[in-house]
Image (cartoon, rainbow, N blue to C red; front, side, top):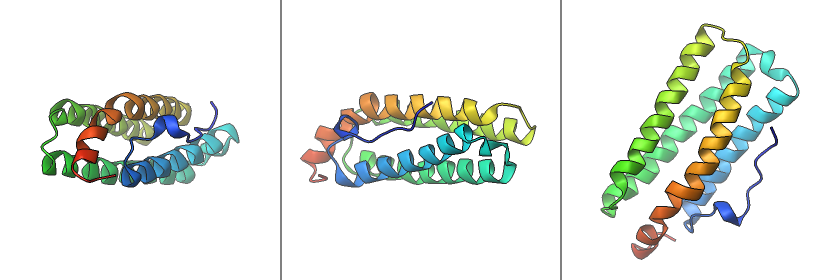
Length: 137
């Protein structure tokens, strides 16, 4: 897989959220580099990258959800359900990692690249108007 390159098609029109998404891309690209250079065979490296990604996504989801509540975002429930699905998948990856499942890094990378790109371009873009209307630009 190739690295994810940020372009305006990923922008949700909110500088704070766009900056967080760019940080997520950066962490994902670290994982991609590790997988493609075969450094993913280093368990400590993989664990550090997955932990960083999980921690940052938790922070990011918390930020989005804070604004959902603050702005009474109408699509909050289905959006948060998407977040929970992602979190469940990451927990599954962690469990598989602990049991030393082979090929896990590539599986994680493929899922995350597809999920994050799709989530931003479809689900996250839905809150742009709401956030902008409440002054979050």
